[in-house]
Every structure is written in structure tokens, then in C-alpha cells.
Length: 246
Ligand SMILES: C[S@@+](CC[C@H](N)C(=O)[O-])C[C@H]1O[C@@H](n2cnc3c(N)ncnc32)[C@H](O)[C@@H]1O
Image 1 (cartoon, rainbow, N blue to C red):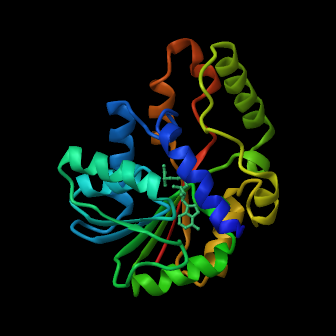
Image 2: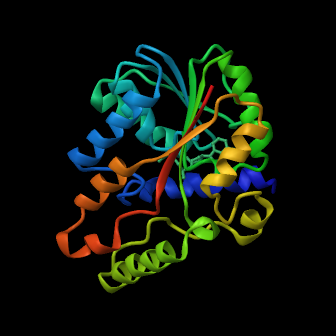
């Protein structure tokens, strides 16, 4: 079976549990407000045409649509998109959901292409980012990523272990239904994680002009404040950043 087909199968199977993890589906008003603040600042003025690639169950798409943008959500997984459609309908938001590959955007003329936590699982990230540039005709790129796996600093690795140990102790269900298949991960250029420096290099080598990066302290702060006080010393997430270009 093709790697992309196996990736699609993984996410179809993961859709039912994806939103139970707080880092996948920020669920407190504080976290939602922090993300809304970030998107309001980093996206063009609404109403802009936004393409959310690897949209999943729709966290970014829903937040952008609430800000008044016209959003197209693209994803390989029909099951993930089905969750997005249900949430959009419940919120009275009109989001176009398109099943398809990241490197085959549905049309062009977008004002911005955005993604969260997709780059690590792209088989050809540079070619894909180049393709997004053609889909925006002078628009913006906004990537939301976090430094996990091989990209994590030693102190963050310790905190991640601590968070995992706490979850095990409390018998919290894992964030995913299964591990990504090892052979798929090793074939991906960033399957073991992507750090901020590599992200910037990737965006620049894909031909996007004016690359800038910022750490999303507000989002990290809101996520940590949403934990029980006794757990806050471990933090809630790996460091999050936004890379913007265009
Ligand atoms: C880690 S989830 C992120 C979902 C969402 N962006 C979020 O922030 O919660 C990755 C998503 O990307 C999708 N995906 C993975 N590879 C893809 C590809 N090559 N083309 C389109 N979607 C892809 C998966 O189906 C999944 O929904």
C-alpha cells in the first residue's frame, strides 16, 4: 500500500479519538481566546480566503471562520473532515471541506495557506510548500508547529516524560488510537520532529519571501493555565511557534 494511503488510514482510524487530547482540541474558553488572538494578528484582515491544509477535525478552520474568514478545509481523511463538518454545522459556520492531498490544493486565489501540525507528516514538504505558494498568488503562509521529538530541548524532553508519566499514573487514555507506523515515520523527512530552525529553512528553500517566526507564548500560557494547578509545573505542551511568510 502507498505511504499516503497508510497515512490516510491512520487518520481515518484516529478521528474518533483525536479531539479527546487537549493539545489537539483546545477546549477551554481561555485557550480558544488565545488562539483567536493569534489568528486575528497573523492572518490577513477578514473576510479573506483561507486554505487550512491538513485541517483535521477543524480547530484552525473553525477559529478562522469565527473571525469572519471564508475557509476551505483540505484533508486526506474523510473521517477527520466529517468531524469538522459536524462542528461547523453546530456552530452555524459555513466551511468548505475538501477531501484531498496537501500537495494538490483545491484551486487558487487564496489569501493565505495555514496549517497546524501537518509538516512532520508530509512526504515531500518542500515541494508541497512551493505548491501552496502558487495557490496563494502573493498571499501568506502561516505554519503552526511545536518542537517535539528530536526537535525538543533536553529540559522539554524531561517535561514531556513527566506529562506522559502523569497520564499513565492517572490512566488517561492516550492521545492517539495507535503509534504512527515506524516504517512510514522513517520515510518522512521530518518524521522524528521538526525544530524552529529547520522550519524557517524549509519555508525559505520553498521560495516563500519574508520568513519570520515567533514563539506562541500566549497559547502555551493559556494551555498551562487550563491544567489543574498541581500539574502546571510540567507545562501543557512542547514549545509552540508560528512561521509566517509572504
Ligand atoms: C496532526 S493532525 C492535525 C489536524 C489539525 N490541523 C489540527 O491542528 O488539529 C494532521 C492532519 O493532517 C492530515 N494529513 C496528513 N497528511 C496529509 C496530506 N498529505 N494531505 C492532506 N492531509 C493530510 C491528517 O489526515 C490529519 O487530519
